[in-house]
Image 1 (cartoon, rainbow, N blue to C red):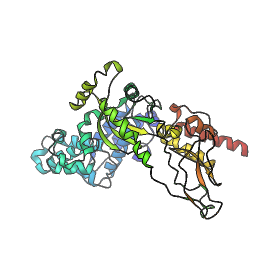
Image 2 (image 1 turned 30 degrees about the vertical axis):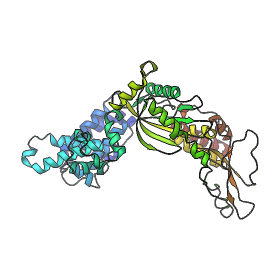
Image 3 (image 1 turned 120 degrees about the vertical axis):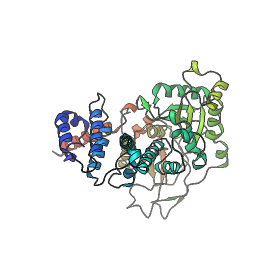
Image 4 (image 1 turned 180 degrees about the vertical axis):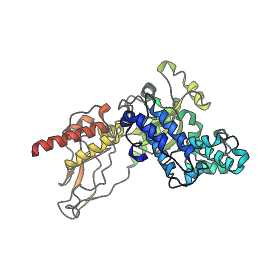
Length: 446
């Protein structure tokens, strides 16, 4: 019965809400866990009644209610949820609500001390699990070792059980809970441009570039005239069935010694931003391609203060800290990298599909055409990738050659597309274009 109406999209739920709510409260019964069902129904109704209802939360409550109704035993604590296959779909947030509800019984400690302790520990596991970087396994081990609160976790007594990355995320957990506003990301962009040499081209990408007002992390793309290494694709030609015997085998080579010496991300960009008082912690780093870590928001330019003040603020965890990722991309690949890093994922998949339809390949380094004749010297103003080492059985073998990919306009033009504003690069746009394409096809066939 529940499945017929509780999993409807929110736009339909709001229209049918009175009848649905009445039937939910009056007809849905659980033999062992009716009190929990009623509690979840109440929270679900409260979410539906909000002016800005979150349809994902409504769906999560519906899913949890259905799971609890199907469960044939009493739910004694959140551990039952974690250990039961039937209840596995219930998320951490709702598990925490169930634990809180069970602990509302003030007599439970007197009735069953072991059960009370089990519920309390389950509640702590859920709380620790909500901290970025702490998964359910680590959270359970911490509680078993005597970590009974977030304050215990921050005390340093359990540092030996955690990785450097986890410790950094715990240190800034209160900060990482907050979303980044567009204005804050813009201030970080201005600070980076002011701190780095003018030859660096610095651009905000990701959700910021798609016009989303707030997001979980800042993503920055940087290019430089001296960084030109464009690795060849390792993919075979799309028509692998007909060309299976003739496709060239490429041996990707390592970087040359002079390229090792010009590792600008690690030797220039990151050290400068650390010295300038922006970078607080490094979480992970790829030698040439990317850096992932935590920064202190500099604020507007008039708020920057002296470099020593910013570094002191980082040392004392003063100010506001957020997660940031830096992507360092070859200048020749700037257009394709901009498309990939702007997103969203559905839009990028659509670009990959369009390229494939034209017998080409699209990736973060550019748009590539399959070439069957032996490589010659590049034409003037023609982009270059690494010279391929080709081992072929006959003249039909080939290799991928890089098409001009320095700007997004270059790539859209190559694919026969008009420029698409970053704010429209999403599933709605892609699915809308697909529907229009089907309609056009239908008219032609008719």
